[in-house]
Length: 185
Length: 185
Image (cartoon, rainbow over all chains, first blue to last red; front, side, top):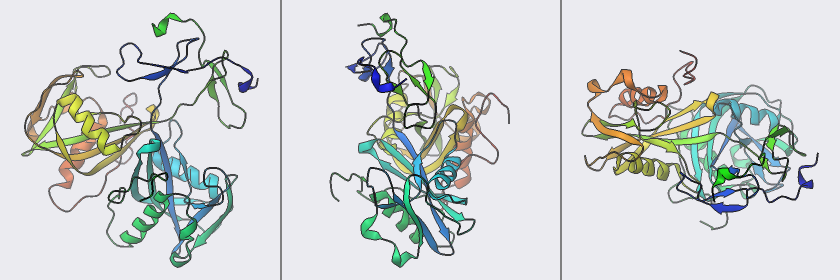
């Protein structure tokens, strides 16, 4: 069965369902209501002896740019489990989670990103199917001009800022920053 | 238009769509793929002169039990905006967010809860449509045996534990606690 072989409308009519207070997309054929909700992204700043793991994206958006291993949380998964899974999938690496580094709102695209600080268990890394290459970078060698998303920069800065000491406070968006790549600033 | 008046199947066939790696529910009539994802709950521990705001639920689940003002994050909303909105909707109250108190995983029901610590701007509170009543409780008068969910207890304990000092660390689930109300412990 090819899912694109059917020609019905799907949930395409915008209306407020009975008992609801917001417009939703409803299928005119079967009445299915498509509730859309914000998505949770989980990932990690993963460190091996002072060097930071980055992955060069093999997928859109921002193909070819460098990012932290991160992706959508799956059903019935804790955020820590999700971060560990994403590092495994994108960099074939094993980590130990240390703390929740940042919670970032990217409201325009309805994303909440939870980025952990983590320790790599070894320097054994390799590109997963969504990565062109993976590498461990000294701070001064990070490809700052080729990072995929603003929140990658935020998490790296917040990791650096916290240092190795007692500062375990979870960070949020830098003041005024929305993460919106369509509007600079 | 009554959305329940149609009799089509909707997304009811479980299959792995092309290019995907997990089973999803697909509509046999139109091919619509229903991607389900974890949901984000936002809320707050709201305090007025040492007293804590709780709401008695007018809705299922846990009708009649006490909870923190909290609910699902909406599209294109930051988590802070969502927490402020939920306090407004459920307790007709205005708050100032102080910090992110806890991030709790309730994996069995695919929820990530972000609970802020907040200051009430006044003691003007009133039940919203989803609350039977709202009240400000001294710590020792909190109805501990009638709290709606385990994570309400966690957030209250974490608020108390942090105190008024410099401890701004964001908390997570207590060790071993899943928040699963079907399995005790």
